[in-house]
Amino acid sequence: MKVTVHLHHDQDCGNPLTDNDGMWTLHSFGRRHNNYKDPESLGLSLERDSDGWPIVRNPGLRRKLAVGLAFFVSYYEHGNSLWFMPGCGPSCPWDSVRCAGLLVWDHKPADMGAKTLEDRRKDAAGCLAEYSAWANGECYGFQVDDEEGNDLGGCWGFIGSTEGVKYMLEEVKDCIPAGAEVEVDGDAAYLADADDLAKPAITSVNVEV
Image 1: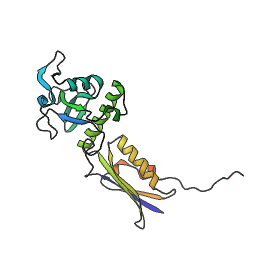
Image 2: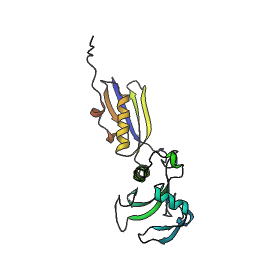
Image 3: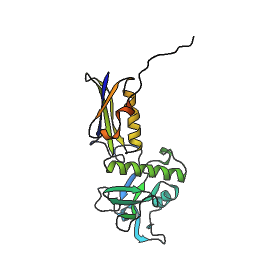
Image 4: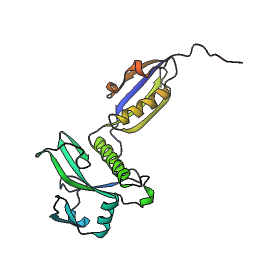
């Protein structure tokens, strides 16, 4: 049996910040971004404190920042774009901005799985990484067919060139019958090797009585 795995970039993959419930909201302070938000409308002053961060005038936002339901975030752009937690990404006087935006949890605190400040920081960092991957076009999908054109499975919306691709290829393997000859094509065929996807045929089964 021969199967073909079609790997493609997902051009229609939804924005993980706006198309999924229970996600963070990212407000950019950069006017050329479509998620731009005037800092003053968020309750921030254009003045900076001794550490270089905007002075927070909104008591509710000040509380969110204290407990990990909001974070100031940094940005880097040189070819691709990258949003990240301050101190966790590139630092360049020309291509990076230390305080580039605000990430806010607009849902009930109980709706977030993370409860501690550190765990919420990790959750926010993961959200920024996924959004950056989506913004850079690291979105993929697959379809598996047999030689007669029968649909053996497929899925789209995998985000990220590392974890996203790893998860996608695990899903691909689940669609391939054992012993099948595998061929890979598509504009994202470089992500996988046919030999790595193929599963050995089951030649015998030992049953203990």
